[in-house]
Image 1: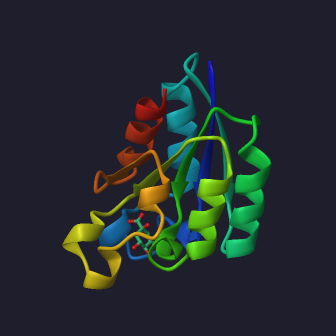
Image 2: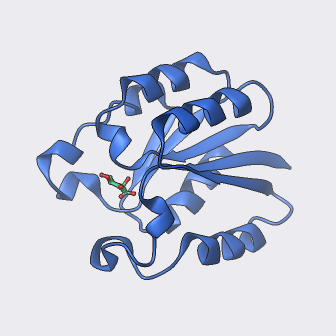
Length: 140
Ligand code: DQA
């Protein structure tokens, strides 16, 4: 059984309430219950969300040397700006898959570039919350 950390960045605590036409009506906690059931026997999921870049870096460092087998990371808007998160991903041993709920390539131009993608094992975006499940399947 694989241990997977799901890591969510800024504003993703507001899922279900935040821009529902883009991100949907479902809270992440509700989705996570279903995802845990779906993955039963195949993956053990731990979850961490922070709005702070530093807290995300600290969690990557903690998890990235053996605590888990893989990290599924939605860095929110830090995806497009953060050299520090890219360096953290490069600095750890555990593979990271970048995910996005929305198809960032259909949106504003500033969302088309990811600072993190080149440091990640792969990228999944545009499938709504199912992007997380697909990333976990890929990781397994
Ligand atoms: C997002 C896309 C980002 O551009 C945005 O800043 C987010 C969410 C997504 O999951 O679609 O906060 O990462």
